[in-house]
Length: 212
Image 1 (cartoon, rainbow, N blue to C red):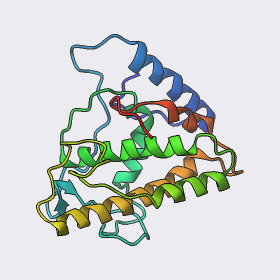
Image 2 (cartoon, rainbow, N blue to C red):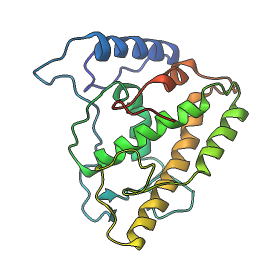
Image 3 (tube, one colour):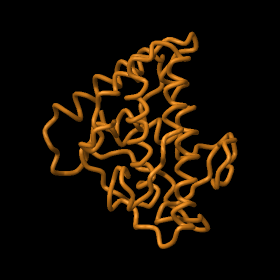
Image 4 (cartoon, rainbow, N blue to C red):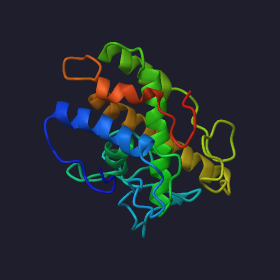
């Protein structure tokens, strides 16, 4: 399976099953390919002209009604959260990530956050329990570069001012809350039971970083 190609559409059960096991085989068992054909999924938001940045992080538009500094994007379009959730079960297997754009840095952050959120959902046997878990996660402090708890030191430059730090903090808080809501819709089935094809990934470590 070539990870740079879209996963073919099929039934949910076939898609999840094939994705889980073929990805495990490709990313974990297959030998290292020196030709670099085994690549992570990258963000398509490479054109950041006119996009506000904070600490080098592009404040990309979001399909969100949650209050925050993100511009609102068209509901019919794909945003960075859609990309992060779609690419998560492939990208989480990689120990390295070749950053090709500032949006890739945000994709890395979101991939780690999804990893964290799934870890919190582990053991939540109903949608109600899962919702409570991600609400509690959303109440936690959101560190920015240079502060204790920021997962990837060096990923973004340090803020140049308190205003820049708070702008990034508010954006990350908004994007985390929106990601949590969308993640619940895939981590649990319509009947409120856990989707094993998602919660199985709670045990993965993204870029060798342990989700707490």
